[in-house]
Length: 219
Image (cartoon, rainbow, N blue to C red; front, side, top):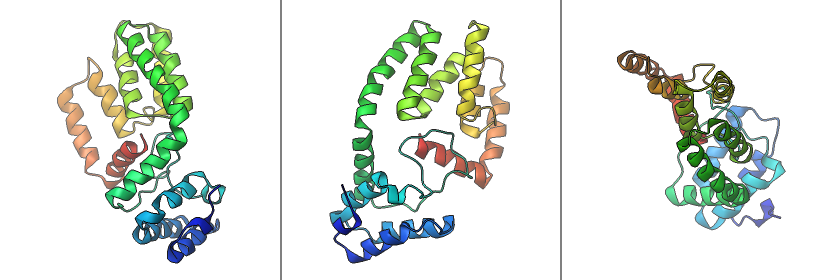
């Protein structure tokens, strides 16, 4: 099991120890995480990202979890400073390695999901979506498929209701920008020009821009 002492750079070790303080404010933790990104070197990258991903010492950090279990919002997500590309690659490889069992299992579910949509077996589609979400969380891919099913005019009331419940998990009930845009654009009765006008107005607001960016990062 990895420990902070496995990190070679003493400065990076000290920053990691600072991140273990659970009584620090969110702003302080975010600033410390950004300092870590600046100080990190490639020799310690895999170890550091492994610690942040797996160690209970860092479970309190205000960053997105391994998978997106709820729709991102400005209140729930904190966006860190950009890190250099090679560090980002290592970071994502560590995350994928932690999730590989669930990812491989979900690959078959995604295949079956596409087949069920093509065959219009929407009840099966929704069951598969719930199964995928339980393993690997929410994603924009799932949202697009769900919005497509919801937009079909000839689906049963039960399927429509089930779609509404699941869309609620993506933030549609609260009219979050990304799910609202997808559902509205796929609807057959919505005025496209009105939709784009409203969405542009939302996009000018910083909170909404952050929400869109966070949705992309989280999913």
